[in-house]
Every structure is written in C-alpha cells, then in structure tokens.
Amino acid sequence: MPEEGEKKRELSKSSLLTDALDWAIAQNSDKDSPYHNKIDTENIAVSGMSCGGLQALEVAPDERITTVGVFNSGILPSPDSGMEGMPSLSKKQLDKLHSPTLYMLGGESDIAYDNGMDDFKRINHVPVFMANMDVGHAGTYAEPHGGEFAKVATAWYQWQLKGDEEAGKLFTGSPSGLSKSPQWTVQKKNFD
Image 1 (spheres, rainbow, N blue to C red):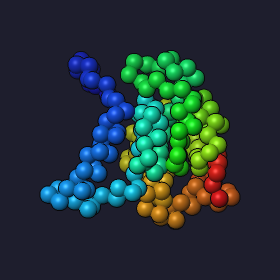
Image 2: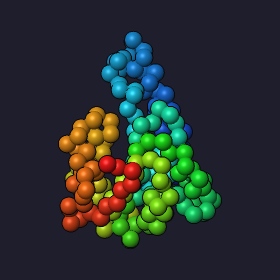
Image 3: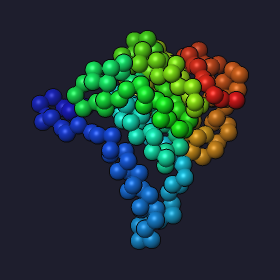
Image 4: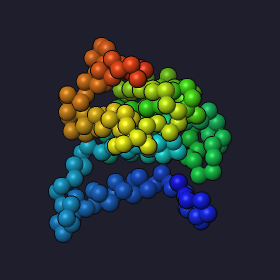
C-alpha cells in the first residue's frame, strides 16, 4: 500500500507473473546464472491475494503452472464490475484451470467471500480445496510470519511442489487435517 501522500504507483499486471516464470526458467537454463540448474521448473505455483488472486487465475491456464493459490479472492459475477486495474475475467476462466487449486477466504465478512465460494461451487474438473477462517479480507497476513493463512499456504506448497505427504495431510483424508482445526471451515473436491 502506498504511504499517505505518496505518488500513485503503477498498477501491477497479471503478465508480471508469466514474466517471472520466463525469467526463472531462463535463469535455470543459463550456465552463467547463479540459478543455473537450481530451479525446479517442473513444479511452479502462482498465487495472489485479493486482486492478485484474480491475476493468478488469469495466468493459471499456462501449462507450466502446476498449482494455483487464490487468497481472499474470486472472480466477480460481471467481468467489468471490479476496481480499476483488476483483471476482467468471466467465470468461464475457471474452466481453464488444469492444476490443483487452493482457495483461502476470510469468512463471510471477507468482501471476496461470495465470489470465492461461487468459484469453488463451479470448479468440478480439478482438485480444489476451500479453507475459510473468520478474519475478514485482510486474512492473517499482518500477524507474525503471516499467521494461519501463511501456515496453510506453506503446507499446500510443500505438498504440491515438493511432494511432502506429511504437509498434504492438512488437505487429504476424510476428514482432512485442517478440518480438525476449530479456526477453519473447509470443503474439498476431487481429492482422495
């Protein structure tokens, strides 16, 4: 967020996510790069919070992406009803998902709650996990180390990107590990 009185910054664009992928893959292939052969280009996540979640959904069809995180976000019912700079997506974008997807919302007081829950309802072709904690749109990001939202997201990435089955227990099983927490309400589709 800009500081009070600070000049308005340029809005970010979804293409920055794919630009970052291009850069990382190029660095991994460049023998002169300090990142040469150090990046796992077979396991790539995109994620974002609020408008950033829409940006992640916009680039999610990229075949290089193996998992998606959508935090405090969801596609609006009308493509052009968002704020300036938000990706103008229709709900048809959800049909383009091809990888496991994690949604985390801040409960019914989260401005993105209805949109995110509607997305979850519509996604029936890929594994999708919905986690809700009654903390509002700001999630727990301001808490030390990102709070509960960061713990859940980290476990998701450990599982999806590194194959950590222990971390995956938060999301798998009947009931899933996360569903045992009194702080979270969860739903899932196409798991187990």
